[in-house]
Image 1 (cartoon, rainbow, N blue to C red):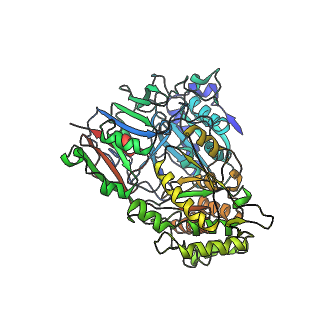
Image 2: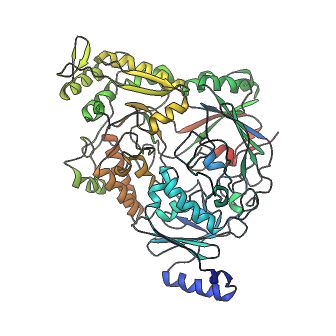
Image 3: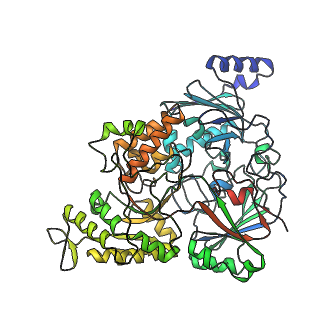
Amino acid sequence: MKYTGYPKFAQHIRGWALATTLGVVAGLAGAEPKHGIAMYGEPDLPAGFEHLPQVNPEAPKGGTIRFAESGSFDSLHPVIRKGSPPWQLRFMILESLMGRSYDEPFTLYGLLAETVETGPNREWVEFTLREEAAFSDGTPVTIEDVMWSYETLGTQGHPRYHGAWSKVETMEQTGPRSVRFTFNTEDFEMPLIMGLRPILKKAQWEGKDFEASGIDVLPIGSAPYVIGDFEPGRYLELTRNPDYWGKDLPFMKGQANFDTIRYEFFGDSDVIFEAFKAGEVSTHREDNAERWAEQYDFPAAQSGDVVLSEIPHKRPTGIKGYVMNTRRAVFEDWRVREAMIQAFNFEFINQTLNGGREPRIQSYFHNSVLGMAVDEPAQGRVADFLAPFADDIPPGAIEGYALPVSDGTERNRAGIARALDLMAEAGWTVQDGVMQNEAGEPFTFEIVLNQGSTQDRQIIDLYVAGLERIGVTPTVSAMDSAQYTERTTTFDFDMAPYWRSLSLSPGNEQRLYWGSDLGDETGSRNWMGVKSEAVDAMITEMLTSDTTEEFRAATKALDRLMTAGRYVIPIWYSDVSRIAHVKELHHPEHIPMYGDWLGFQPQVWWYEE
């Protein structure tokens, strides 16, 4: 890694000389500074835009929003592997050079950076900091802070930052407020990825162990919110900084409207719902369609003091269900994994828990333009991409794969029969009521659960009853959130609840989710342990496609490979987010294509009596 600082003598250059020099360099590179960057084409918003389309620019400032979370936290350091910090901290107290517009598939606009420019083939990217950018303690954000943050996160931070850093050949300061990253691999998404890294204050961490977890050091960021009062296991408050440097920035207009964002921590989802009904929290996301339809008629909802909002979206379903760890011998064979899917009586479970109201996830990119009918044969460019790997990929990836559909009764006769056949093909048969191999060893595995998730426990209890019909009795281990995080982070499980949200602009994060390089790296999100040359090739095709058509074809091919791999037993999805909230909380009328994204409520909602 070449790390080059800006020469000291050049720091004194002013006026036309610097402008002329940098202008010549930019001209030779065939690039020019811009206010934003899109994965394909140009950003929708012009350089002089007044605000993002998904906000209310007239939203008042003030008030408090109170969320409920299950579990606890033991760390306030959100960018390292160790500890269990509140997941919101990474997005709420730290800023990046660029920020997303959620009304476009993948477009970034300047946040800490005032401009971005790239090479003709995106072989490098250069950012120029805003002169007014400042941390919450009032000190300026400098290029030194930026460069230190990138290198530190790439080497000592959470593994999610390591992949992109490995693709950086050089990082060099090119001006008083400019930094350039040159890449060692062809990857059209890299300029956008580099624009989204959180920026920390270098001076805060001097003499400290950056990788140490805990609550003693409160990270200093440049975002609108700072960590206020907190008590692990009970609550965390984020307080709006009245001196936030970017409050007049067009990108931030209509955002960060609450004075206080408070997170209350509870034992499980049932307690959370009761806490909301009792007025202890002011908003609640409901992921159970049956409860949304049947249990939201309590007095506050009837009187109008609580409002029920449904927020539509056009994003992929992602994958949600129960992942099988292929690092474990018990789930190495795709036939065994398919048997586990056959034994999962989705229609009966969905009817029992949701009144049958929710559709099933059919593939990873289902419900979007990036998905396709995976139960039909691959065609066109999708088939072309898969053809070289035909002898090594799971059955169904090319010819089509469909999830089983039961008759809805508890017995699930067809699914159980198919599961037994598959297990027999894999060398397992029922002997004296127990599934065993030829050596007489019983087939069993452990399902780990977070004890705070009532829904997962309900689903797994129904699933275990179905598995007993094929002579399989798994061990179900419910544990606190810290232990659950430790077990899943180190891949110390056979089966576990799994949820990966996917966007309309998938890219480098796909390697983190299911790339071979991270298949055995502790802390990666490749929980299933995928190691597939074909999967890696499709991700590479996605990252190097120069047209929307090629990109979508590569993504659809990846979708087929992951679905046919039978790594996850998928459950249901919703094409709306169901949010109950007190009437004083409001959201903009315009709903972006991403609908209810991660920061939707705390970032663009507001409080008004």
